[in-house]
Image (cartoon, rainbow, N blue to C red; front, side, top):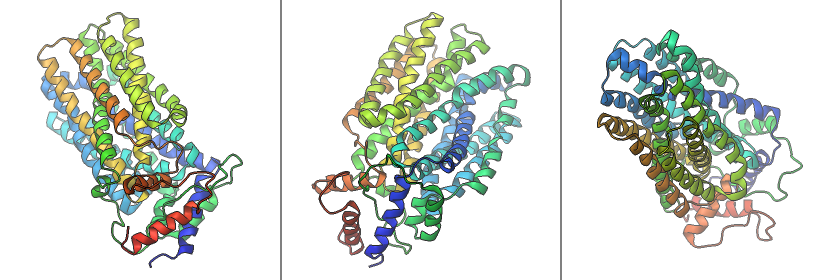
Length: 494
């Protein structure tokens, strides 16, 4: 047997201390650094809607070319998100996270100095690789080091920090583009270089990654500096997934096959479908809303301002969702929010006054991008075990980019065909309704569980047995149950 029982207990104790800690100043510094990089990721992604009118004028683009330029970024993001999760599950979280920021900052400068349509498309594809990869790595990193009871609020707050990049990009564009042109926005997009260097120098590695790969001394040192016992932590010790041993074994590293095994297949398919819908909603609005509003007679600066207000409501929704989702659960939050957003989109498409456009648009994004979209990332960061968490979230993010890849081109065709603008809003209503149905029918409720207990519950469901209790159990301890299950796997029985 590769790991004896005492080692498994020691590893579980380390993770228990991490999960039950107070949220300390050291947590805040790590979280704030990760958050700043994630905000800049959102800012750079959402430059597209701001720079698009200027690029169309300078390079004399057709609607279809403009749609392809918008989609090019998401082609790169799809590749980056899918690859980064696999890489991060092998190399850790810290180094890949810093490299992601350096990559998309460098290609932002190339985009700023592009000389024609083709060079700009190439720069955006390459930039997208770094942008998509960052999303796939940062959320598992946050989920793995924050205390368990803070996980949902802090992951949704991270999503809010990303979402705030949409209105900030619009507001900065209002101030910068008229005088300095769209190229200045890409120069600003090079700022992540600073955050990437700070990450490389200051952030600790994920404790769960270190434990899983057998680096116990490094993990113990980080937990010793980070974890402070909390008076309001749960009395019972949470169940923990025994980490993989330092020596190679079957499935020691995450793979896409792990995401579609018997435990996860139903939930993974549902998650990927919801991500396609969420990506279509978020990116379709952020990219094309300024142009749709301008087509309705709103000035260029006015369309940026309206877009900032409407998309900014999603940020507020994400912040509030973090406190609601722990009370009502992931399934209800996502399902009801997506369906409400669908109804609001239909209503939004039928109004024309400024006040109605702003109020209904803000409510649609409050529930669609804010409540539903942020909770979706909480769910994706919890559903898979440590060995494949970054892979799982990376592929979830990649499917979100599929939505971002498809929808701008589709809307470009709709506009080119001179269709009614109401069809634009009907499209988003249908997308949101389908996502809501999927959430209500095919999600696994993860509320109130540590990320290790979720794995145990999924195993129990597949094997037709009752999952271990999470508190107050008189049965064998959760750690012992995990030890027994783990030892069976090592013996080839699991």
